Length: 344
Image 1 (cartoon, rainbow, N blue to C red):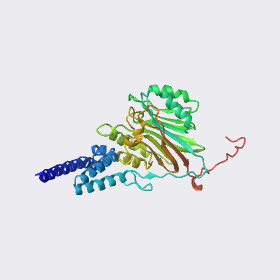
Image 2 (cartoon, helix red, strand yellow):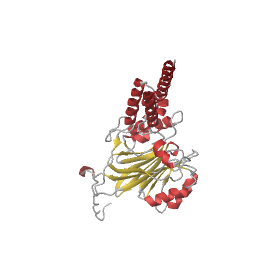
Image 3 (spheres, rainbow, N blue to C red):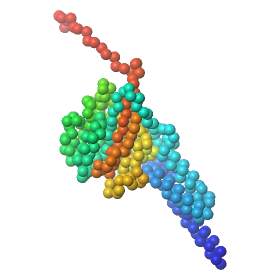
Image 4 (spheres, one colour):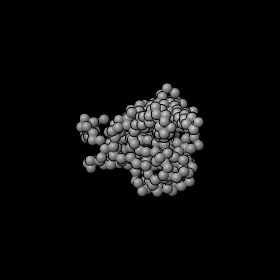
């Protein structure tokens, strides 16, 4: 009787372990088929979390002597985690990734700061202090509400003539700040897509500040379709930075990268987490949804998450250089010939 009772308990544990593995296995698989339907892409955003939970469930299954389901779960969890990382800049899923390259010391190194300000950030002084301390050449911002438009006037001496896209959306639009001359400023999609050419020592680069909406069933995919034309107009060299509300391996980010012919700077790390939770939890439980993409002669040296400034998004700082131009692409200097007097 004792042995029968023990065997029954083991069988029940094995059943529970198998059910637990299936509970994490199914949504994990769904996330690989976001290209079939937008609702499935929602699961991709939590692939890392689901893979860890599946691995823990697999260990529980092994402890419960459900050998086959335990081993399969561990293998699936490991494979899923690999798709979020890639090897040497080559992704297993998502857009092509741009590996970091050390600066060679021969060219200028520039900085770009990306931040979703949060429209009702209670500590705007932390944001302004961060910008003052990091001295980025370019700043791309999201959720620039009317409150923020007023605060940004305090740093106009360092960033004159900013592009701030007006928006009827309550949280505000996008913005590009530059310490270098800007031209060709334009706004698209209710102010969520700001674009301008920034002159870096005589070489213009195309800069975009982007803010996508929440995933399905919200309006993210409507925006992706609506922004296909502006993304296709991006010319090299280019930097696209923003809050994509989607992870780098998702179908949403993949489609945006393809639309602009862009590579993603990765890995950057988890940039979003519930702002009232302890900051140290973000790197473990947060979501990697703030991205920087590049096109053409942009050489990225580093990307890092900076300290909390009161938003639910962390600031992202990248350092980059411009690759040398081939002689055939370098601008040709012309000298105007004097006009003979008496000619009309």
